[in-house]
Length: 211
Image (tube, rainbow, N blue to C red; front, top):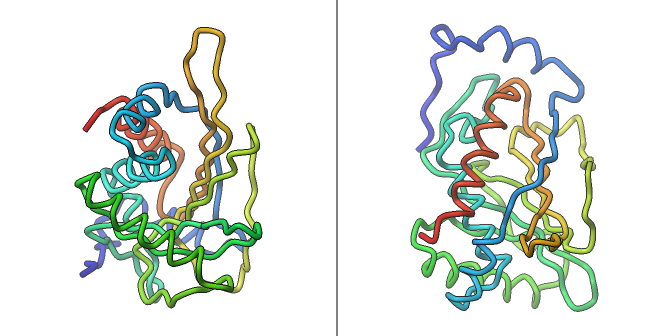
């Protein structure tokens, strides 16, 4: 269960109140992440690379408290764990929204993710299920594009404070290293560039870890 953050003792109370009044309170960054070790590990373990780096992304997200903040009734709540709603493409090139709960064990996560991916691929429509909770990140992959910037379609009237993370095409450098662009959009009332920097650092460490 989420717990309320005490705004009176939170150093960012004024920041939260200021940015929460914006029509567009989200800001975004794009940085390149080295996925050389992660790609090799995924192949060795027989895990689809998409599922492997999605798990690493959730590991990084859950390690940073600010990424577990959400806004509810003009208050900030802290979730103990964050899951993912990822877009899943079908054979007809349409996509649907999935729900994949985070599991620390990569094998358990792989089983759950593969089951959900198969369900979405065989279920028509955009919303293939309901989403009762907001302890999510919104995730998407654009493996065709080595992007350097990215924006999101958003309804400003819909209350939303979930981070949005997207990844792009994996490119191979002359030395054989593999790089992948990662876009992060977050609510400025909940965090700043410092916290996004912590995420990128945690993500790189996760990608370099074989665990």
